[in-house]
Length: 297
Image 1 (spheres, rainbow, N blue to C red):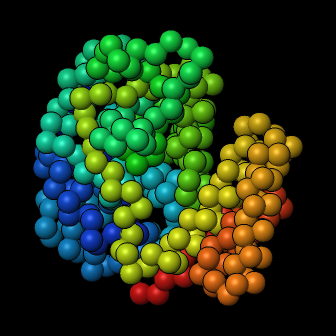
Image 2 (cartoon, rainbow, N blue to C red; image 1 turned 60 degrees about the vertical axis):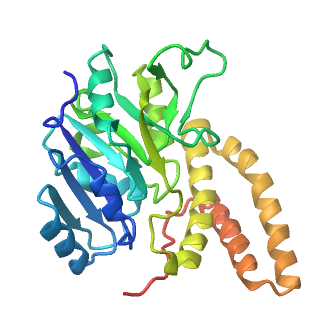
């Protein structure tokens, strides 16, 4: 079955995303249903979205779930065969959805698809460099993984596997970072296909999903979770020893930088590297990804 506007639902997880959400939603066809999962539990935000957009349903989470669990919550409300996971700081080009629809008809089998980021310096996919690539010859090309800020899940196909039942598509141990890589890794192991569609373009603003007045607290959270998620991901897929070996250089570097910035009284820098150190230590000790940005209201 190919994708259409009637068989596609968009899921957007938000947290203090009031400054970017309108541009994101307005870049999506109003013929497509959109489910917003708001991790800040903002009743005013929910009312604003549902009053303004007829195709938007906003789900309030009782706590800040993060990306993986937030996406899973939104996917529980999806009634279509395909779901597009989208970050609120992503903007689709005018023909993006149509290009996805057109190209999906040409692909025999896929578990996930992704549009192409317009930022050539930071591609939103990874390929197997050991295998010949056809990305310069065709409009869709096979990849090993895609970034989580824009990805289409073939739910009908994924639901054939026991591991994805009960809407547990993303590993909920991840709060943020690498939940998409983990999903792609699990699909690779099942020999499922993941493709990128070249003519379907998007613009990712990058680290703009949260209102900038909360930027510092969010930056602390990002640094903690980046270290935690890297350790957890490597431990899950390659074992504890590999996780330690891969994480140790960053841990040592962050510790030294923390000590340096503490010595020269650069408090904000000190706190950033402290969170990196703590993220690694907590993952090493097997603790959950519990850190949350300290944001009131």
